[in-house]
Image (cartoon, rainbow, N blue to C red; front, side, top):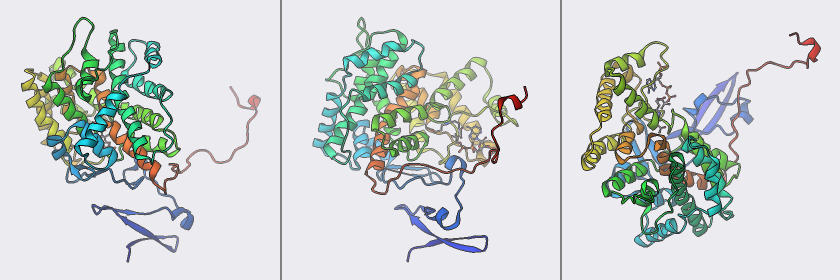
Length: 430
Ligand code: ACO
């Protein structure tokens, strides 16, 4: 017999079904609550609210577990690569050799931007933030694509998903070129996904760039680790927009905007800015920790804390290890890495952080690797967006294929003025 949760309110008893996920997570199904009792649930910031059922990504924040379609992130980081992981996230299974080759071929086929679309970049000022440009250009690119009428048709959907994933990378590199006043590069069909991106970022007419295999592997790892992360702010945005049956490009464009903020994807930029500032000011990590902990302090330790992880973010563990390896392979040293390690150690031994279960998240060390590859700081969150595209695509499709899907439309508790009558202008005072 299925379990029920019992709610007592104003002398009446209500029974609510309990939903159990495949990993044993439990939820009270409140869909009939308002109709039965007049009550709604209030959960500001949605920390206790399941917004959907999803079969894409599993996180256990207490144990520090992250799995895409059942596969642990540690195994994917070690054995897979971004394009294969993207296929897994989007289509649910690891591809066969042929499926992977077909998907890669589609990514190459769709890497070009329509020439008219390339002219759109000219409208942005040179100091435009690449995240704003990326979001606007994804929407603009949508006008140049065939409309995806049947997301349930696997072949059509795969073509559409490959278009979005591939063009986002070209748009991202072009937005960087625009910001530094260099000509945009055409993609090279002989290069795979990540190398091609680095070529479009760094080749110049007078200085061809041959992607360094170590830089390619490092960026591939970063993208793989970002491929999905269940119902975070940007993915929930993509699902919310998609739930109105807006198309995949419009939904992804909204996802980019949600990701931009420093409490979400923008944290990778904020971390490096924070570390640079500590480096330049010569402040000790102890002084920083004191400032962060000060009563009424607005300062946060960027790259620390997470809504779901109350233990190590498994992605941060992988990236931290990779930092040392990548810097050594690329023959770089970075004083910011030492500061980051010292900050981490100080925070993990400080009762403020211990009591609040604040651990380094994915953004704490990723910027160090991106800097070592030569990616400018204002492009860090764009890299995150490229990496997260498979997750957004998979979540958008899940919304569309779910026969029970309804438009996302939360309720509220109104706290404004109660009924009052219109006051004519002459009676309103000065
Ligand atoms: N530095 C200092 N204190 C912190 C930090 C931090 N980074 N994060 C949380 N806290 C404190 C809060 O002030 C609060 O303290 P209080 O109980 O005394 O009021 C307590 O820890 C709980 O924090 P909340 O803000 O309630 O946590 P929430 O789940 O709402 O926010 C978030 C999570 C946004 C990630 C937060 O930890 C944060 O702002 N971190 C810094 C920004 C960051 O790194 N964002 C990237 C997240 S990962 C990602 O999106 C890819």
